[in-house]
Length: 90
Image (cartoon, rainbow, N blue to C red; front, top):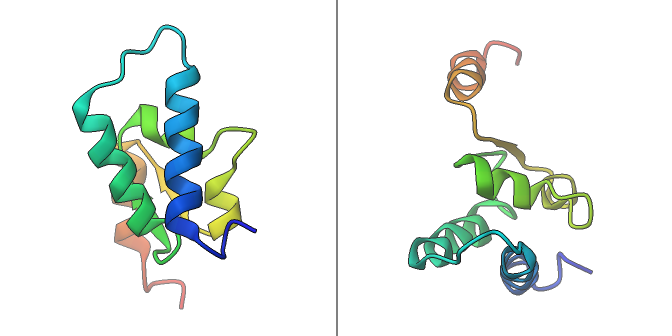
């Protein structure tokens, strides 16, 4: 179902989760972060982002990383290790 209109599904899911976080303040930059996720998740193998957005993407209700088969990371060292090893396993 998510894959029919992925950008709309991702946007709606992430915006709604962000709004439901009671202690979170919605910032203008959150909209741009979500737009990046809309573009990356359905079409990329890896998505490196900040911790909060990574948590939303991997949220137990949405699991967008699993739905779209995109590995999502927020840790810089982990991202470096992934990038460094791309192509070595092929």
